[in-house]
Image 1 (cartoon, one colour):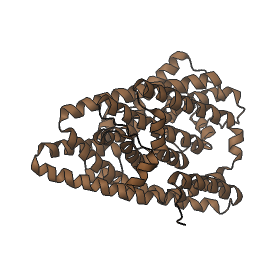
Image 2 (spheres, one colour):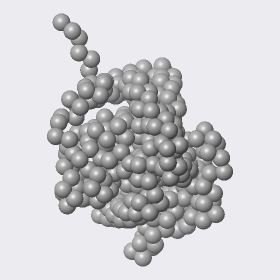
Image 3 (tube, helix red, strand yellow):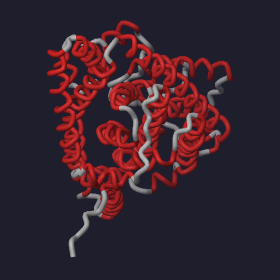
Image 4 (cartoon, rainbow, N blue to C red):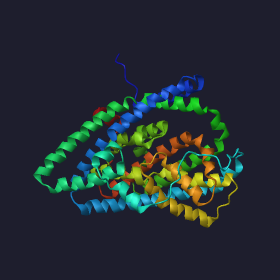
Length: 415
């Protein structure tokens, strides 16, 4: 009898389960397993730049002109801005209703305690422009800076489309590169269960499971917000747009689980591109919207920013008026766009908000111990949010052709 290899999602679940067990029972040995996660993340980062660039060049070349790109771009940014406001507002509502900072009895760090995170100094137009417009495409590809790669690929793709037969040769070349990169992605994904295993084993060994009990109220409140956003807001959007929400989830379940288990939405990006194209989103829309989403549409992270800021204010007894909270929301709406590519960007922005409203920045230490657990949820939400955004823009552009077949059958055909 021929042995059937377990699906990737079963392998990832197994890696998570074994990681928790090893991390709990072998605390001395488990931290060294983080090298497996490091290897997997480096493999992912290795393929992101060539994959995004090749897919986007081909997609933009198919669009063909600046007018079409501009139309899709405006729709995309309007959608991103609207969802950012909703996610920020939902975080504010939840933290004010459940008041975890007041209800939980936490030992507050001294106001003068060092956090080790430099606060964001707010939105700087010059720095933002310098970040999105690359001096060297080689440099930004080496650093995996998605937004500058997108900008260069837009110009390159449109120029290739306007160059006629000579440009077609280049577009065909990058089309072949994108197909090869999807194959490479499948090879890299074979290492995903080991990366998940190493990541969770190291986290559980370092922080223990006891951190869950001490912070259960905070964690459950935040996860309730993520649940409401995904199955409330995003479901409603799909319902209005006549997009089959649960069918979309069935196609992206692997990248969502991968983002959750590694606490990195970046790790799921290559698989998300592939999954959305199988779902029926237009190739040019996927290649354009999804990379932009990784800089402008991180819904779970946006919700966390308002939630965490007010939580820390509550813990230190700092009363924020409704006006101050609305001001914070508007500042975050702009500030968060200026930190694309910054490590631990959410914490950097939160530190900036704390400093702006004279809330002790040391309060971040209350969250650092469980940040990995919260990051798992917000990373998975980011993936779902960007998938829905891509489906919505595809629908608006008349380029959503939902497949009628089971995603697992489609996957077998691809393999």
